[in-house]
Length: 276
Ligand SMILES: [Fe+2]
Image (cartoon, rainbow, N blue to C red; front, top):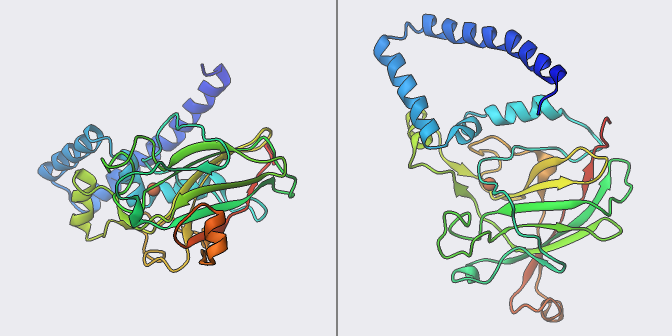
């Protein structure tokens, strides 16, 4: 339930922002002399976006989500930068115990390469946060997210887990690959109409929370990805681009219980204290 103060603040914001937004739209309509038919097409298009549940995706590909992320979180030097959540998060992902493995074996898994992603969760001053919880989601090495890839078990490459007393975490996953955002719906029509490709660089999404700290939503990318400079949602931040290290020593591979070389990658996460 909203408090009377919150309701008052919301009404205040609406009273300031909405007339400006309408005036900006009217200005564009006048400047381009938009016709009745064209305006009806716009309204029909937005209706289709709503019916397809693609407003978040539309916000992403028009780079509006990136703008709102920048306006909301700004650039703090000491905390890990935030990033957009995107439309592919699923509520209530499974809790995974250590040693955390983010996926179950399935037909097609051999197409990928194993990655151990690890780091420490600390406050922005470096104090470990032993009660931190990570919530991670990503595409498989092929076929995209679990909801698109019928070979994958439900909630594959998704999960929540805790950290050690030192704030350290590690999880086993597979290196994701670049993928295209969905193109069969109204957002796909938009991309085609404006000549924008649908590719995103490979990435892994994170939500991280800890007591007394602002929750962080972010995502990491990998050096050398062909779409780093050209992400269709424009979300790449340099400090979120990680380096992969390949391990091919037989003993190391065996110790990990694997049969093929694997990769590691380090990502330390610093959360901003509440009110900080
Ligand atoms: Fe994604």
